[in-house]
Image (cartoon, rainbow, N blue to C red; front, side, top):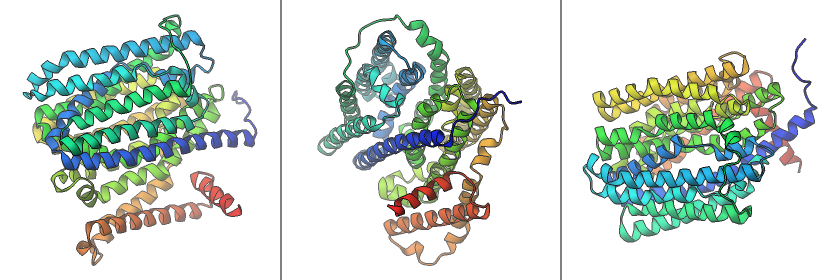
Length: 501
């Protein structure tokens, strides 16, 4: 006899799914608007500055993100996990966050003259000193603000995200237009962090105190998570500094912008759903079977939307880069065409870490990141030294596929189920993406007239055609399998409800 707890009524599962969906919708809406603002900011600033300027600032920003990553204690995750967090817990989390932000700022300031020498560029001194202000402000954010996330109430985050990005974009574009300087990026970043800090206290009034009373409790959860953040930061943030050192600031800038565009489409969909899934999964801590099913449903949703979006960006990369960034950035096309499909495949597993965290298996996540770092770092450095920027891009793609395997192994270990089960949950999406790829690689090159079209019209035509092929193939596969339960049924039911109104 199974020792699993009895499943709750269907209505209860539907209610949880609805709360997660509404949360994801709020995050998606805020993220979409923020991404739109960010895209405008990127386009304007990139057209006013040169790749060397972007590469210069990217080194400082990535260095800051690296330091933030390796010291992350997971304040938001802890508030979500500690569903009964009291005053002592919140004060401890605030104190650790504030000290961490101050320490990162001091390290960046101390590193400024060293980086100017290492990169043989005196501008690095001012850039690092400017970027050092950001972690100080972000470290002071109100920990109670994350209670909204714990309660699956993401409307406040929508407001905070939009206001943060809007402030940053206004400052950044204004300075870029007037002064044509890379300081536009830095000052925009700082302006956004100040607005986010103010709103966190305005929306959830709280006067934090310095305290360490819950230090043992916090580190009981965050100890392994801090290790995970440390390793993940090394895995994700070392590429740009390595490239800047080995191939120069221009190559690093091209890689950075190509990576940003590669992640743009998939991340816009995947991150909101993943963010909403974690608190939803955390409510099922005592019901592992329901949690597993909820995770697989999330994989299906990510596969249906995020994965084809990433592949689509790769197929239209040439016109996309030309129109958004201009001719001087066409070197980023190669980066997008190689990395975007891999990012699309990886997007299926964005929620795997949330699943393991909700089960309390942070040690397994740490092991995954450690294996990835040991394999990834030497291969990436060797490929860059041997083959320059193309070598770095191809190495990043191959290692991304390896990371997919690590996520499958993490799921299998956490759930006790098949290694391949998450991929099976997205098999119709994988099939539909394959059909879309066949269209772009085989049929589209033979279509008369596309080559003579204006780039903007050609891009629009490609997006419409690609989306049509994908949706048609996905729908056909779902119908051929007898309309099984899944994300397709959720969408069909929602459309039906809309028409009934």
